[in-house]
Length: 289
Image 1 (tube, rainbow, N blue to C red):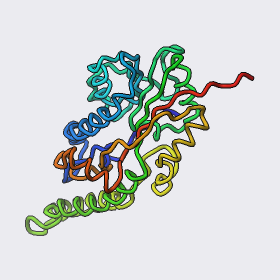
Image 2 (image 1 turned 30 degrees about the horizontal axis):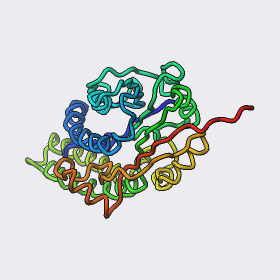
Image 3 (image 1 turned 45 degrees about the horizontal axis):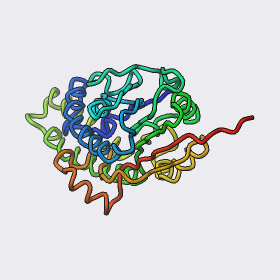
Image 4 (image 1 turned 135 degrees about the vertical axis):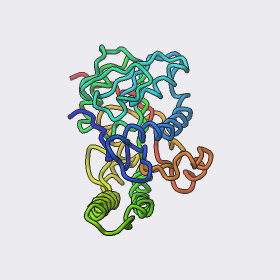
């Protein structure tokens, strides 16, 4: 099954949303606004792992989103190829030449890159064994993988803050839920529609969905744990040579967004836990059969 990243609007793939009712005309504006927050987070994570990339390496980024990290890597002197599924939420906001692919077969030749990089992507891949095999195929001898992945900490706090977002959304919507004029038919229809939309969105926030391609909102506490990923990498023929917390705290509901600076997010991560964890892997030589 191909990589799929279609989170509900309330999460916008850790982008968040503005208060008030969301209409189809608002979605693009909301995404563009919230990309500033996402870019700040991903930029800081890239700074954390930049030393893991060999100088001048040929880098493939899988699930490149807007291409912002690919562009950053290119500016750091790497030769970058970026791929993403065509129906990605970020397709309209690309800032780097990205190749569309089917989420299954990497459209590159064997042994053609030195580093395969992904950020918050592997948890969305249903067939991880196939993806690992494709990564192994395109890696040149001596190559490595660098993966950044959400943690159980991210899952826990995202679930918790979804209830806070539900309260915030309901309170911000309250002015729409009181009569503005005499209770005539048109006003009653407006009130009914506003109450329906508010209730539907509020209840949706109180019933958080899974973020990745497997399990549920509870089992993701284990499926996003670094121990689970170490086991998965080992079972698919990769050895972990370096790993660690990315050192930032954030949630899928974008707790305080840009108002909470990176320095404060770093301090929060020391207390509440890092929202992402990075791994550097190398393929384990396969035994001849």
